[in-house]
Image (cartoon, rainbow, N blue to C red; front, side, top):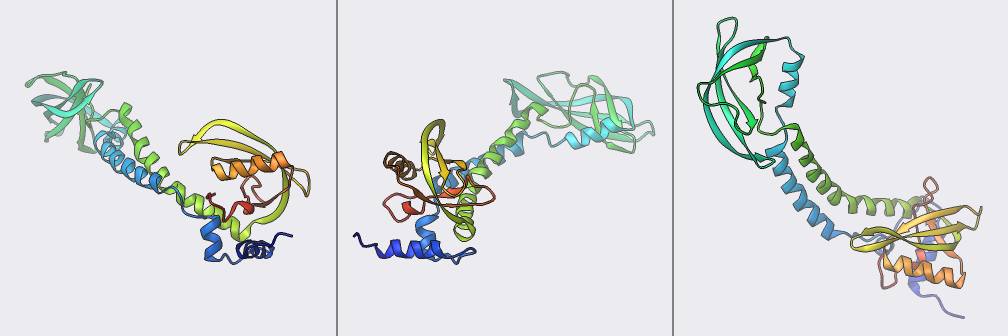
Length: 267
């Protein structure tokens, strides 16, 4: 009869403890190690660069534009006093900056800056200026916008969002695993199938592992890209041996294979 190692006895004793369990550091280290450091580094770079692009390209002027559109607004004739190139191009067209001057209906002289994609006016050109009646500092010539970027540039917000997800993702994964260690239920099941998917995670193919729970016959699909978990599941399917599972009773597809803990691979 094969003698259990000290680790296996410790693992089994841990699993025999009813939830909520105390999770020893040695168990947490083997069952839920922090992975994805490369993702965190890449995500941080992506987030930083995306934030810079968002600062430059997001249409921050839109709240003022919405105020002006909501009104009430007034229209008067104004004059373009200066035209300059900006450091921004949209669809290979240079964004132009226009300084303009106008006099409100109350006789107050105002100045402002507006932008267009491509050249629209020259210095001295007369333009129609719309301004917010209650706040003439909010104004724009007809045909121009208040900021360098237009609404089509809003997609840049995706870059810092993706970066944030890449940074936070590994921490959420570890937190979920540690919650499972503390509150998960222990059961038995049989591997019904191990199926490849078209999804890759960290350049590793993700597999669907179909588990039939021994207690009620319910089939649960677990997804994993970890080679050790996949190899273990395939081996148990071929041998028809049952597997021990630690699962979330609220979301049964969140599960772990305790028998994989402590081997040469990580899960």
